[in-house]
Image (cartoon, rainbow over all chains, first blue to last red; front, side, top):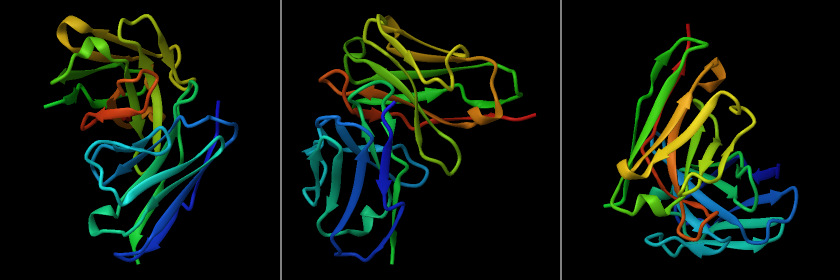
Amino acid sequence: AIWMTQSPSLLSASTGDRVTISCRMSQGISSYLAWYQQKPGKAPELLIYAASTLQSGVPSRFSGSGSGTDFTLTISCLQSEDFATYYCQQYYSFPPTFGGGTKVEIK
Amino acid sequence: EVQLVESGGGLVKPGGSLRLSCAASGFTFSSYSMNWVRQAPGKGLEWVSSISSSSSYIYYADSVKGRFTISRDNAKNSLYLQMNSLRAEDTAVYYCARDGPRGGDAFDIWGQGTMVTVSS
């Protein structure tokens, strides 16, 4: 299985901040990486797939980058509705695996 | 509207069984691979099982292999997860999720989840 290290696990930020979340793979996965947002009590929602492609309807302040083993999710200007937990996921090979999550909280 | 709705969760004793269902609507269900993903209370996401559009390919996480069975009925637009020999560590919210249109893809549509509690 491919192991994923997502960091940080907790991120304290203010509205308007630029934030970045990292995801590192135990082996190369080309660009087969997705990012999800999950709010308390809700199902995850797909934000980005293929490492950098924005899912339809997702605001442009979200962006993804990277390939191979190192990936980044950036929120350019944090909004109140962005405080949530974010997960990366690799779908390069079975089993598909998720990172441990990054909770973005209000500073 | 594209939608997935899970049902069948509940409280079950260790060693017991439960069958989860996921009703799909708003898209051509038979064209998509489907997945089950679970989330234990306060924990992260864990992939459980996947099934291809025609049920030709089925995969399970090691943690459930031999105990859980995924299936689908394309005529009924439904996905199922038969869970046997349940353990306390199977306690979680179970989500069904659709593979994206490119196949072997990110999970682009998720249901609201159904809670499974395994406890005596």
